[in-house]
Image (tube, rainbow, N blue to C red; front, top):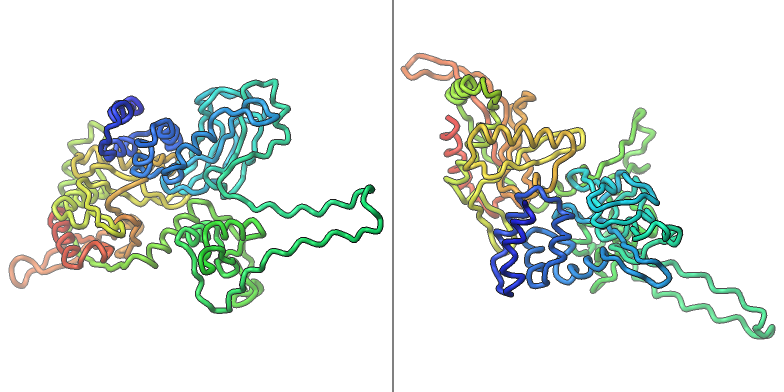
Length: 505
């Protein structure tokens, strides 16, 4: 159904050549359960005047501009010299932010017959473990990246499928011909002199060594591209020992990948025998870092370093809300639904975003994008790492629908079954640690969102009563909003908190 809807919306562009706004179509992609690999296959088949703007608008980074045709050619059956017709499968882009992935497990083995729709392998992305389906019928001739392969760049060949089972032997030594990150080939040793060479002839002159890159003075500033820095963070590398080949010695992404290929990466967090010698500590266990943990760490670090955070807090009286929640749950008892405090906070936040739209925005460098709907991301801690699924259109949904979405998304997050449509996007975030007894905390903004609301626990307090000399008991919750000062000024954030308090009380 999703593909039919998408196809109808692209018909005018494909068959009349008339350019239309791709935003509604992009929204269709983002709100359907179609997996990103299927979306990329669909986009690749579109004419270039549609594919390029559409790919950019929905976040198909690896398939932008001229890469559309290149990526399409990689996945079509070909008949390379001396090889039967075959299809080279590459590491797919399963989310807009994915640049590399890990092969968690192959579900098929070499020689197996595969049909379109069969699950080939499980791929660990920056947010979840997703299944890669076969797009063609054939036979799995060769697995190029075995189970457990780490940090495989998008576009790198991972397997080969051939048309006939009789041709499997032809791919026994196949190593792949295309890919994403290129590893510079090592120089082949000079061949020994042949017997036909004159004995008295002098040995061939040695090849001139490649000019050495100038060494960077100790303590000098490191010039690098943003993509190179991001790639190094994702790989856990330091740029200190990387030589740059860009203009004026600037480090580019290819330099980082080359440094990784030359030897083990130098981790910026690795244990050393310098300032922190291992002998000074008791027995310990080093735990491997999962892909989702690497990406989360890199993005949160980038957020704290590049986003100007500030924080405002307010105490919200919860007595009326808790009374209303009890009344609503009593009426919903027969249906089996039960509203949580988080459900009510999500609804109150969404309504506040519509009332104060300046907060429902993102900083995009040259523009501030203001959104017309409230998509609320909710932080969920799982054994696989921190997940942020999205309750979409929370401003127009009822409390029961919001509650059902939260329960469904939380279950999928704990089972590591979230799809990109479940966590890509969001205009505002909520992190609730109240159930752990935390009174108040400041959360880190998750770009491109401009704000995140940190919710603490509720506690009873004695406060002055309505008449002089009297006291009464009240239940209060502390809410702290973290704001990006580039998007939201302090007075606007204060206005948002005031409206949120009013909606809650």
